[in-house]
Amino acid sequence: MELFDRQKNAVGQGERTLLVYIELPTNRHIQNGSDEFDELAKSSGLNVVQNLKISRNNVNAKYFIGSGKVEEIVELVKDTNLDLVIFSSELSPSQERNLEKQLECQVMDRTGLILDIFSLRARSFEGKLQVELAQLRHLSTRLVRGWTHLERQKGGIGLRGPGETQLETDKRLIAIRIKNISKRLEKVHKQRDLGRKARLKNELPMIALAGYTNAGKSTLFNTLTQAEVFADDQLFATLDATIRRVILPASGEAVIADTVGFIQDLPHDLVAAFKSTLEETRRANVLLHIVDAADEYNLEKIEQVQDIIFDIEANKVPSILVMNKIDCLTDFKPRFDRDKEGRIFRVWISAQSGDGIDFLYQALAEQLSGMMTHAKIQLDVTSAYIRSEIHNIGYIHNEKVNDFGQWVLEINVTHHYLSKLLSLKGVTLLWEQKSQQK
Image (cartoon, rainbow, N blue to C red; front, side, top):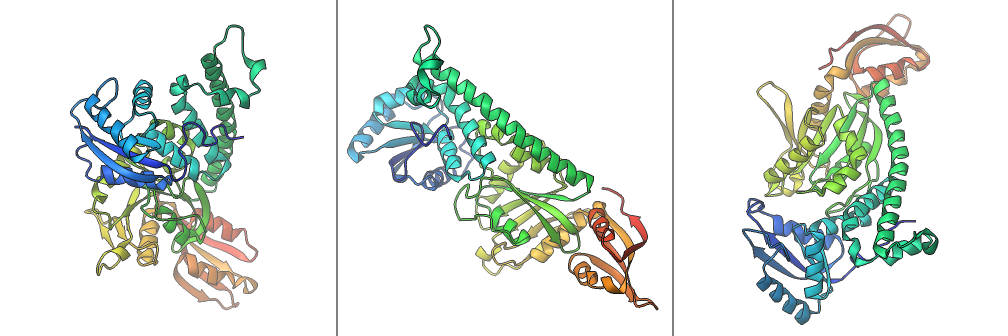
């Protein structure tokens, strides 16, 4: 049973909401911060009645904002009959309590809002556990609100020790729940590790998709894998990590992982909770950094994603910048760009229409060249059908039919795919020249 069934700290669909965006010296360089904050609220299904922007040079210890602004918000809450006020900056537990007392309505900060969106989007067993763990860690600091529902979920009376207050009981129950979730996640993580080790053993290339939320990662994932992962034009449309095997032209068999979208100032509790999911990014052979090419703030978002990639220690993974959504640009043709060393470092595509996907395949083939092998194989007459499959996925440098009617192919594929071919009946290896691992 999910602990937080959208109860006290969750927000309800359609709640009349006031968004308070606080501009501080630390975030004034963020050009679209208030727009993104508004989009986050709408992604949670809230009815945003009004937006208020406040500029401050320092933080008020009691309310975060000044008492004069608090009085102004009190009047707004009364006049517009608001249910919820959300602040863009992270509030301390005491600031949240003080504001609720003055405003006489529910108060939430940006971290709580993102957690709520994640609770809506999580679909897999692992994803739900990860979100609940993040919620518990974040909300455990706000126990002074008196969560009697925690007692009911764990049986109540028999658990309370001598002289234990309700607050102490709630804290202990949350600690127990965190421990239980952590154990269950540990089992899931071990299963992930087994799958990861199997891929490494088979030399199966791993390609991870990363990028700012709503950049089109899941749409590209569906295009590359022919999967049907949920994709929509909203923040955090996809939360659960999805891994699929795929046959890539000129590369052969590989594994592609679609991960959770990043956002500026992603809450630390979420980064910690999704450590296993983000591990796929860190262990990848190639990282595709997906960017919305039509977003006027994409340079800023590229930097923010790169900061998170550095934080999760994935900055050493070779990466390709994938400029997506070129169909939203006027008269823009797909292409790729090479750096001074001649390496493809940026590809311009449309995952929606498929334009430029061939350029992406070429970039991946070049990047994975260290995992490729150059070989000559022979196909018996009864196994000639395999030739058409190799034509679809690999480079065939040369082919001919010998005097016995057998196909002799000189190919360039991954080590893993060659092993798979050689396991088939009627396929013989004549020679192999392995590429040097880069």
